[in-house]
Image (cartoon, rainbow, N blue to C red; front, top):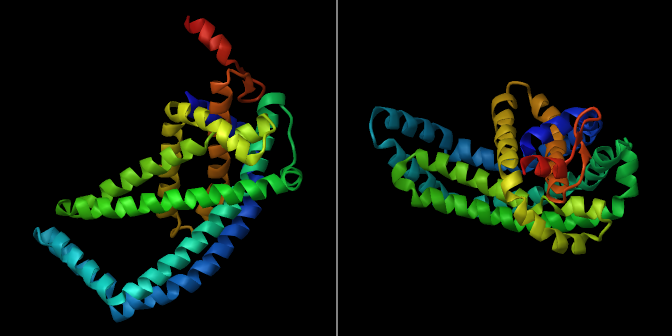
Length: 299
């Protein structure tokens, strides 16, 4: 139900996604430039000195022909780590720093988006994005800093768990990667659920960042049954869009999809917030959703 209502709210506010398109495009461009300086040296090692791609291709061919391909792949990855562990660890540190920076600038838009959507859903009032961004800048900076630090720690744990899961499921061969990816996707959805009521509490109840985080945590736990599936669908869709259209469209489609993804996450947060607090809200073109009436009807 939350998924359907959130999609309706997104459809009614698709213009907001277009307004932050320029912001996301600049952000993605900066990320590409920075990541290129990190990836290029590692790529030269992978494809030049170590010829990793050629060795993986050979192991895939072996796997198709027999059952030894997965074992060959593990041997290749183990050999690569032993020979280039220092370069790999340095690259991972840089990836972590870039990941934090990207997370910080993405989360910087969360409070303005939530503020605009909250006004639209509660009062049917449209606020300009850049006005909302400037007026809530101090709150956004503090929220983004705390959120990004916590998320970085959680995401590192999820990443480490996924790697350990791959190692543990090693006998399954290539299916180990698929299962680890599905588990990681579910854990990321769970992580988003635990943050889902934080920003809505800041805006709707006019609380400080830290107090809102503390007060919203109980509702965030309750939101698991409402938000988990929408967040899981959103994460899977984002991954599918990036992997299937990123190369074919030279990165254009992911650039257009990112602001839609950001607005949809906020729609899920606010829809679940209004639902959990039994508050009326506008869904689509003036249509009002009243949780109390639905409870009365069900009784």
